[in-house]
Image 1 (tube, rainbow, N blue to C red):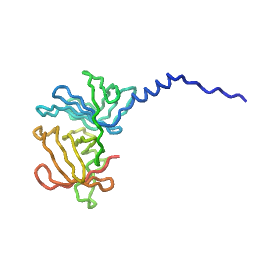
Image 2: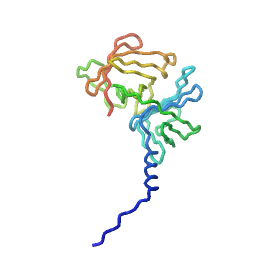
Image 3: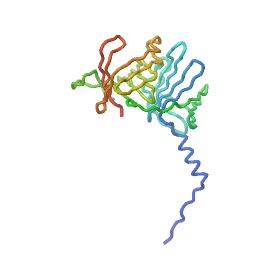
Image 4: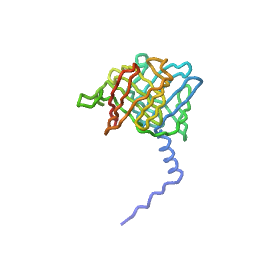
Length: 236
């Protein structure tokens, strides 16, 4: 009986394969690039990405895009769920060459942008949430993943964003975001951009929260001072 010799793989090839694998991953988190008073912000959680552009002074919303992504040969390929500029550019797909090196993410566009990864700060509500229904939870009809009309809340490492959109028509209805805290049942949003009204930037909003199973019960008063009760379902 003949035995084949074990295949010898040179160390430099193993190192090269490991390097390629590492380069092809973008860790979840928040990445920020400031160019003058214009901020470019990337939020990543698993295979979902949101890319925002807005001015900090004077506060001016510019754009937001987001959706599920894959990586192929150091190219970020995004299938967009929403695009605030869709009526102008008709874009449903993005392909962006990139490079990741420790805490720095480089998007090789024109111009090239270098993003710094923000500090990880996990909190109770981190994750992706879809608006389900108005509370209280008494068995009323819920809006789920299969519904093309969605309102998404994306929370990660002390940053939040909500986006209202329609996946079939690509109609964009609005977004807002900034920093947040969630502790001891109190949820606080600090608004840093708001597509519907730039004058809302700088405001802080306090709410109560409670996690029940896969639901986030969100209560308090809306911007008009009226009582509100919303239920958000964790997105798988």
